[in-house]
Amino acid sequence: MSKYSRAQMILHWAISVLVLVQFAFHEAIVDAFEATLKGNFASTHPMVSAHLGVGGVIGILTALRLWIRMEAGTPEKSGNHPQIFDRLANTVHYSFYAILLLLPITGGFAWYQASEAAANAHTILRAVLLILVLVHIAAAVLHLLVWRGNVLARMWPSRN
Ligand code: HEM
Ligand code: HEM
Image (cartoon, rainbow, N blue to C red):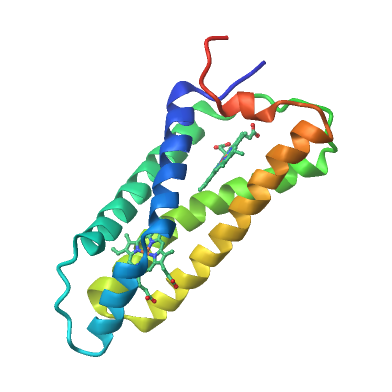
């Protein structure tokens, strides 16, 4: 079976975990940003720095991943699913790259320029990201149950 390269797999799962962390621990940054807008910024909460740092790392790893994809490409498509799903998957995958690059940019503008417009864009982007992740996971399950292909193995490090 054709698989993604080891570097692509490691980046895929590392970024997934970091995105989960951003969603799980966002209260501190939301509170700190609200305080900043009210003009009484004082937060040195470590979770605020963590959100900025982890977000920046996600952006850098995503850029690296996109570059590797451009250089190495993707493994040959497999399975007996209708072709339209390949196009849908491509759209979702490219949207992931775009969103994961735009989130740090909008977040940076929101934080360093105290921009409410950028914060709103950040909130919309993270909502779209959440929906696409759910679609992405549903597609993996659909592959397994309906088309009987183990698409997960293409992204899972193993010896063969
Ligand atoms: C891919 C990386 C990132 C993800 C997944 C992410 C995710 C989130 C989430 C889930 C929230 C809560 C939003 C809400 O409840 O409406 C949030 C808020 C925020 N994030 Fe990020 N973030 C990322 C990167 C960054 C970066 C790099 C910065 C700054 C340099 C940043 C700055 C902010 C700010 C200022 C808020 C508060 C905005 C508000 O309350 O409206 N984020 N982020
Ligand atoms: C934040 C969470 C996630 C993001 C942002 C994400 C993003 C992506 C992207 C961009 C690709 C395409 C790689 C490329 O062709 O360059 C991909 C592929 C893949 N992802 Fe995820 N993913 C996430 C979570 C998950 C989870 C939880 C699963 C497990 C169900 C999963 C399973 C897969 C599989 C199996 C592929 C390979 C698809 C194929 O071979 O066509 N992903 N993911």
